[in-house]
Image (tube, rainbow, N blue to C red; front, side, top):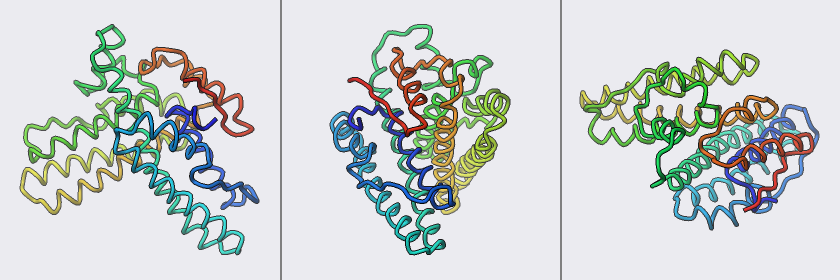
Length: 298
């Protein structure tokens, strides 16, 4: 099964495994079946499909390394629990959380770059024109964005915008038009969809705060670059990257929690012209009580 996971399923399988590990640390479960880094679902996918299909991306090779270390820390969590050392278990769990965020960020980067390559050179359509606007600008939100910008789109659009923003820092912030957190495409989703339609998902309020902080750090980076305060700019830039990674992680977690919601199934997915992604998400939902299971034909 692991070799046939697509990138979206790889993210959700990983998140499910992380949630199980969280559960045993906090007393929700007594034990967990630990697999090696190359035997788990994500590991099998990484060492077969990913290294072959996405080998040109540096993120893929980095993901292999960080995933291996993720499993090492997870093993330390379980070992500490068996020794009844709760404090040590929580310490290793924090390492797991940090690496999990990096894993989700790298998977999103691979996903975005793959989609960019697939879409390159294709003839524009009405749907594609909207996709190009979301991906290539202008990046300010428009009233219709919330109708098509589902949580998965929001995650990818944020990464594209953040990635392109870092490229502008080479010009020391000159001629950079930085929009407000509420006016970017992700801000529109948080305001018009997330907070209004899903008030029961606590992570959306956390996302709102983290996303606001991301924009503040981006503004601080540009301001300090313009005034040639390089040390302060570097510090703000590193903070901005941290908030960006946290934004992507929270969006992935929200998407994971929406697997039992009609929202994630009914929103038109412009990034996938077939129904394969929707069908696989529904399959994962049906199998959710027994653990994520998805079979996607190549």
